[in-house]
Length: 241
Image 1 (cartoon, rainbow, N blue to C red):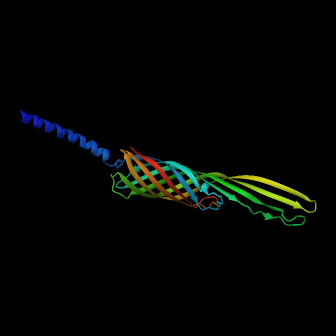
Image 2: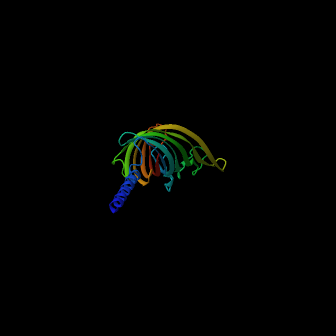
């Protein structure tokens, strides 16, 4: 009788173990299925580099601008995945001119001068890109690292505002005339780019990973106001479906 009870107990334990193993395997196995879809939501800081509008802001903190976006990816064979993304960022630059050009000619006294004292550039970027990524670590682990590249486009709109001064001092009429002008000029352009990305992903929950990413965009545009490149540092969440 005792032997039968012991056998029944062993059978129950083995059955329970067989039920628990698949659950535990699913919990700690690879979050993203081989043909699964995942969503990345991220935010961070972008740095626009180069371009025809040089920044001379005294503090320089305007070089850093916020960026946010989403990306939908699909896992392909092996360690490869491909995705499409959309985002937003901006570029702000300032120019200060403490030296004005002298006005020369008949009737003008020394000290007469003119020029642009201040210029302000603001550009908003809507971003769309396609990117393919390759996993550097073995799939299924709690930590993953991906490198990627692809193609994308910046859709830019913005304006340039300038403040100019003209100070006329004349000897023939003994007058002093000061004129201050403000001028606002809009701009828009489309700039293709080639991205290069590196991301570190740490699984924090089943189907959820914390993502630390870095992206550099090589911008291919002949527009004078377009930056030559953009660097992005971001933090995000990747959700697997």
